[in-house]
Image (spheres, one colour):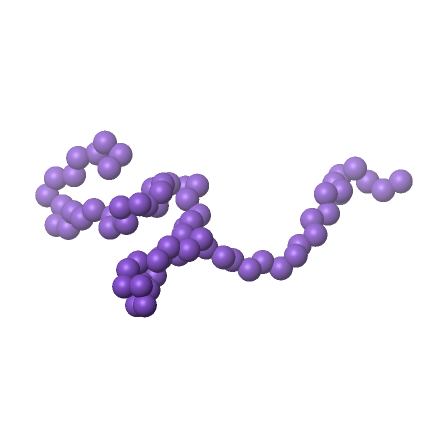
Length: 71
């Protein structure tokens, strides 16, 4: 990883990811929640993929700059 060869390291393991994994979890732009939620579906007997659904309250961003001042 990153072109660095490690020697005499006691625990060299790969990051365990799914075969269909998109992106790389060590990148800074990778979202903390990931892109998909993965769970095992007992009725279907296989792994099920779902897009991450995050609930966020409505937020109003005031775009007026405080540096412009009020007239």
